[in-house]
Amino acid sequence: MNTEASKRALRRRHLTMRSRLTADDIEKAGAALACRALELPELARAATVAAYVSMGSEPGTRALREALRARGVRVLLPVLLEDNDLDWGEDEGPARLVPARRGLLEPEGPRLGPEAVTRADVVLLPGLAVDRRGMRLGRGGGSYDRVLARLARAGADPALVVLLYDGELLDEVPEEGHDRPVHAAVTPSALHRFTPRPR
Image (tube, rainbow, N blue to C red; front, side, top):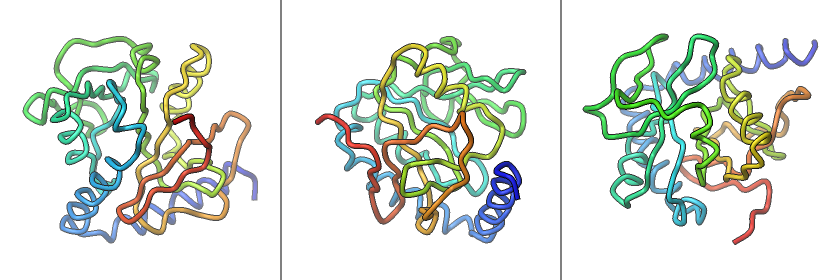
């Protein structure tokens, strides 16, 4: 099986496992995830965090975003463009989110441009799994591959953190040439660090 086929099979498996979660499971995991994520020194020091609005059975991000905003952190949220690239807007709370393509919720305020992410201190990435080297399995749309490439081109070095459920840390995730490792993963029960970062 080639790498892309291996990724597709792994995505199906993890999406099936997530589909079995109840709304209560997702809410409890989101609250625990927020508490755990706030233990990350990178988030404690951050002035700007690029986050995302979780959808469906994804680990919930609302509690974490609210906690960050309450600390005075500027939280950026993605806006999906026609070509699957991401623009960004500021998170002004759930009342200022509007429905968008593919069932997503996006901030209704001004667009800040795709380069806005290069000014973030931390970028929170969605994912389905991560391995012990920090290689992330995304959903396959390529939007965050573009974000990571944009960060690299700009010489930006934010902390890259993937939010997952317990049990989604694997021994190995299939890797392609364009894939980039994350620095840490947060699950409801633990922090996992892959690449040392300066304190």
